[in-house]
Amino acid sequence: MKKTGDYQGRVEECVAFLKDIIPFSPDLVIQLGTGLGGLADKMESELTLPYSDISHFPQSTVDSHSGNLIFGRLSGKKIAVLQGRFHYYEGYSSKEVAFPIRVLSLLGAKTLLLTNAAGGLNPLFLPGSIMVLRDHLNFLGENPLRGPNVDSWGPRFPDFSTPYHPGLIKIALDSASHCQISNVISGVYVCIPGPSLETPAETRWLRDCGADAVGMSSVPEIIVARHAGMQVLGLSAVSNVNDPDNFQPIILEDIIATAKSMEPLLEQLILEIISRIET
Image (cartoon, rainbow, N blue to C red; front, side, top):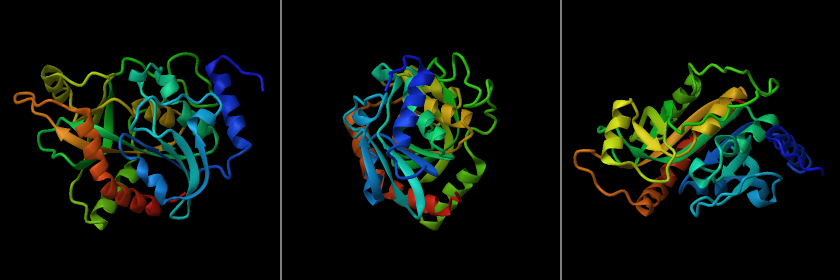
């Protein structure tokens, strides 16, 4: 196969590569974030592809991200799971970060459910809470739609008045109530470049900007998913909450450990959500 250098060409080659080997076109894409990769074990798996085996896929350099694309079924739905993601701080552009979502949207996926680990900014939040995203702030300084627009992929100026689907937000909150998971709230997520964690002054400023939780991922994928016409639901595992006036050191290992400890509840919530989504 001839290798194409431009982004559109790489996307199209990857789509063609996957079309020949995947068992079905997915209804739903689930992207699993830091410390949250275990949901894939609950699937009736039909195909597992390491990212390294997929044409033009970026490669994850973060230890807590497994790096597999898995096709299988959950609650009778045809699912594609991205077990691990890519980050701007790894050196990738936001276009490259969102490459898998662009490919899966062109393979027919209509819904994206993504998870991440985030630091709490809202002083009313508690560590161990699950935040349902209702809006976001893109502070990466880069947009994955920058550059020539491919009209067949989506509009030049996509509307972002409702970046997260109101119906999916309601399903998530209703699912939490049904499962008696009490520590589920909604809020605004802010994406920063990283990899350095926030200073006290930056924490105070991000709060003042209206953010309830901060992380280093997800927004490029969400922008591309919405550009492609996908419905989006985002869930953040709030690993810690820091007070800028009484700042405590932020240890990455602690963030990962807290996210991992939240995994059973998050999995329970996601399984209930999936059972309620109509495809």
